[in-house]
Image 1 (cartoon, helix red, strand yellow):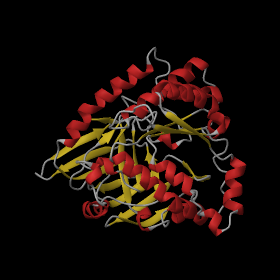
Image 2 (cartoon, one colour):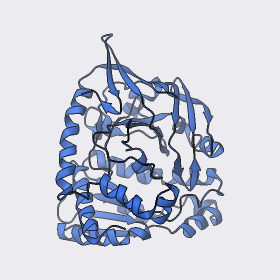
Image 3 (tube, rainbow, N blue to C red):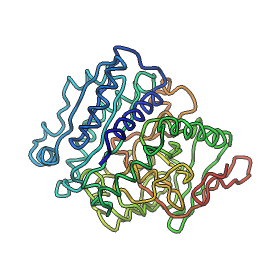
Length: 399
């Protein structure tokens, strides 16, 4: 496990991320919520003290245990399943910061639960996520999250707990004398790449690997963003494309744990922006039900690329947070089906109305599921001028 010194540095990095993730600065009297799984309680304690030192009001929320979560989905009647407390709505309307500490003790405990019930909960909780999204767009909220090592994560990733912990230490720069300074360097290095990508007038991107042949249309008034503090670690640069221009096939060669289910080998075929064919080597029925959760669940909400020069993650981690930031030999891309990110709008997201989002092709859904491919790939930008530029190859941006 992490030492107390590493926990202390980890908390400092998370607070760096929280501050970077908010366009406004935190001030005394702001409200910050820390949500944590039981194995993350020690890290939560470090954060609690540091947040108090910032002068903010701290709300600590312990998540459901594995048994509680299973009981909830198994035993709840229809009203209990979609119940959304008015006190939570009031809290979220006043929230300025949110930190989630992920430390699961099981990744497959909901495998016997009907995915439709899981989907109903996601749809019912969407208004709370919408409140946070709108507050973030106005600069009133910043959020970040991380993972702490657990025996379950290590087991599912086929590592010892010590090996898994070492991956977290490397990935978060906790082996550096000043991890926050290391993150600031990565943040600044990524600015040049984002500027380069955003200076191109792109008609579409063509993504090709052994099992991918996909066209991604960025759409109007878009920008590449990323390495913004929202996730620790995060090395991805991403865009929320115009979902209507997605064509071709996408394959996720990295397994995925989602809502207590294991999924492997997802293959999606897109036509006119919508998934028309779904196959999976494992978890196909679950995948189909997830992508039928609502109208937007079968559309693209995000396309992301990770540069292996930034990421030290070189093992499958059984955690989307880490797997979507995989570096290794070839970097990775990931495609998220479901909700898009309004902060990829090249303008003030606070002015982006629901009508404007529809016009520009920003997708809306209760789902956001990152599906990761680590194959060697080439991404070519087809510019509106007719020129083609390879922007990503050999796991690196070509800038």
